[in-house]
Image (tube, rainbow, N blue to C red; front, side, top):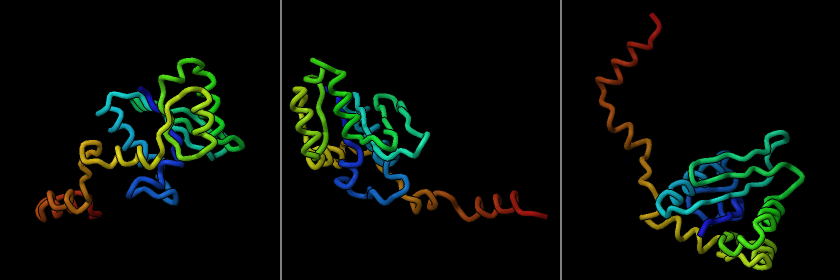
Length: 156
């Protein structure tokens, strides 16, 4: 069963992602991409407040991200998507803790899961790729390599 996700509603429920981060949407997209590959489910995630002239739709494999133009909300876009699905909406799961979004989903006979419940699925070890810290990456580079590259790029 594919998912329709209220992105900015889900972000605060995911440990390590904050709505104040400049790349919060991309952080969520990365986690959702991994989840989509592992679960073999299609996902559509909606984000509102896209900058003027930057509203767009981006495909990331089984994940499609919709950046909704200013003046319209992700909630409205989700409701429109559900209505466009018609009877097929019953085959989709909507992820949101927003009561209006949940109500619209139920009215279209879609399944509903709260953002908190879905976030728990995302943060399980099997649902997350191993994130490599900067410290781990740097540990793989020895001092000889650093000196070599410094010489290569230094100005004579």
